Image 1 (cartoon, protein in one colour):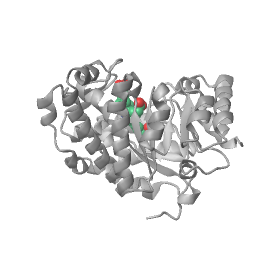
Image 2 (spheres, protein in one colour):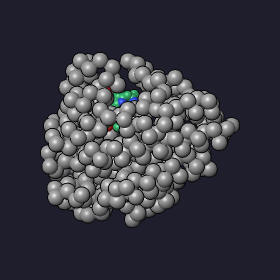
Image 3 (tube, rainbow, N blue to C red):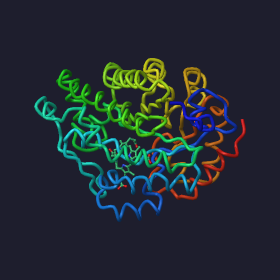
Length: 350
Ligand code: 1CP
C-alpha cells in the first residue's frame, strides 16, 4: 500500500534518512490547553474521555494546531490511558488532578483485565478519528498515531494516578517480578493491537511514549522498557514493514544508544537533557532523532528561545532530524511563541 503522496511528506523523508530543505517540525502535546480554540471544544465536550471518544471533536482538536501553525505532522488527539480503559480498568480524568484509575495491584487484578484482543473493539471511535483525519489533513502533513509504552502505562495502572517516583509500580516490579511481567506482557499485546488498528485506519507513523523510562535502574530498564519496545517494534514490522516507529524513552540517559540500536525503532525522541552534540555523534548514525527544545523555553520565548532553538538546529539539522520539544507543551505557553518557533525552523537552511 504505498501512498503516492508519501514522498512529499517531510516527516517520512526524515525518518527514511533523507535530507529535506528544513527539518520537519511538530510538537508533543501540540493540541491542548494552551490553545483557546482547544479550551472551547474541551469545555463543550463533557469529560476528557468523551472528547477522546468523539471522532468529530477529536478530529477537530487534532486539526487546530495544523491550521494555526502549519506543522509537518498531526498527532492523533487521544491519550495513553485509553488502553487501560479498553482493558476494563476504571479510568477518569479529574479537573486539575489529572488521571485517576482504580489501581491494579496484584495478580488477581491483572487476571481480571479484559483480553488485549478486545482493545480494537473498545477503541473503535479512536480509529474512526484516525480515518477522518487521514481524509481531512493536507497532503503534505503526516498523521502520527501513538500509544504509551507498557512501563509508563503500567505506572498509572498500578499507582492509580501520576506520581513523582512511580513508586507503586516499581515496588510491584521489584517484589513480584513475575506478577508485574504478566501486566507488561498484556500491555505489549494490547499496544500492538491498538497501534495496528491505527495503521489500518490510516496512521502513517507511530510514536511510543515511555515518559517514565528514566526512573528505572539498568536491569529493570532492560526488562520493562527496552525489551517491550523491541517486541512491539518487531511485531509491528512484521505486520506493517513500511510504517516507521518513533520511541520516546524519556530520561534514558546512558541507555539511549543501546535502546535505539536494540529496539530497531526508526526514530528516537530525545528529552531536553540529551546533549545535541552527543546525539549527533552517537545516535544520528543509528537513525533519525527528534527533539529536544525545553518546553519552558517556549513559555519564555524571546532571544533565549531563539538562541537555544538555533543551537539544536545547527547541531542536528544536518542529519536525519525532526524538530520537537524535549517533552510536551505546557498549558501556560503563549500561542504566539509557538508560531515564532515554527517560522524559525521553517526558515532555517542547513
Ligand atoms: O483536560 C485536558 O485537556 C487534559 C490534558 C490532557 C491532554 C491535552 C491529557 C490528560 N491528555 C492529553 C492529550 C494527550 N496525551 C496527547 C494528545 C496528542 C498531542 O497533542 O500530543 C498525547 C500524545 C498524550 C500522551 C500522554 N498522556 C502521556 C505521554 C506523553 C507525555 O506527555 O509524557 C502521558 C504520560 C499521559 C497521561 C496524562 N494524560 C493527561 C495528563 C494530565 C497526563 C499526565 C499525568 C501525569 O503527569 O502523570
